[in-house]
Length: 306
Image 1 (spheres, rainbow, N blue to C red):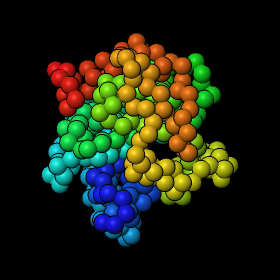
Image 2: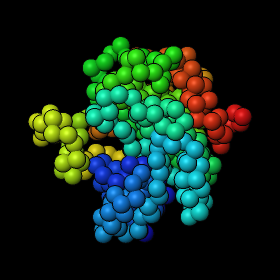
Image 3: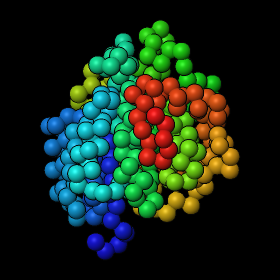
Image 4: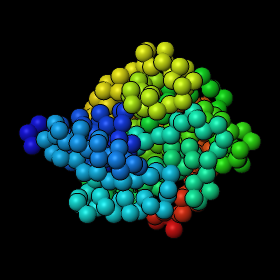
């Protein structure tokens, strides 16, 4: 391909929204895209839209980010087609406001926590051998600008799957704080071996078909916000720029456990301050250890932790 060097890219949540647009933009640029979707019908519809303008046809990979035991098979499916992986974009997220009570996965984890935090952690580990084989691997995660309104937010270490504090909004922002902490800790632990970027995404316009599927009350509540929300095409372009760009942000700390500056950026790729709790190295270490155990103690290509 002429233009940028071809990249092998995994993107989760490619069936709609930002993920669909990002997968399409990446494929239009000639990159090898693995579009991960939970639902086969939605995924096949999305793949047709992606490949209608693709210079390099994307591949559909079925993946439920909440079902951790299936993510090794997802990684194996990608490995059948490439010998390295340049970029992983953890775009998939659950922010289902209709989940008034906590739902559990087969393994007993609260659904939003599993989808938004445990799944990305486990999939990154499963893909780490492919990432390590790339000349300059990148991991892109996604947090939320809404965290600005919660300066005192903390990880509820003793009640990660508990129902006593649950609401879908609390569970969502709790998981997004965890994604920032995972990103900072991964950059620290790989000591510059992986370019890690966590994008602070603002409110994004919901696709019409997704809006139509919401309960009527939620549609009424979302309508004014949706009109003012950011375009998913614009956010997809942010993913594309980060995926293709040469990361000039500092990626490795001077000392283990130190905050890695420049990892947390807004939609224009400007460095922004992470929540105070995410800057606590002891809290990040504790979250990593708990998540490692909760996801079955996966191995990581950059170090031996079994």
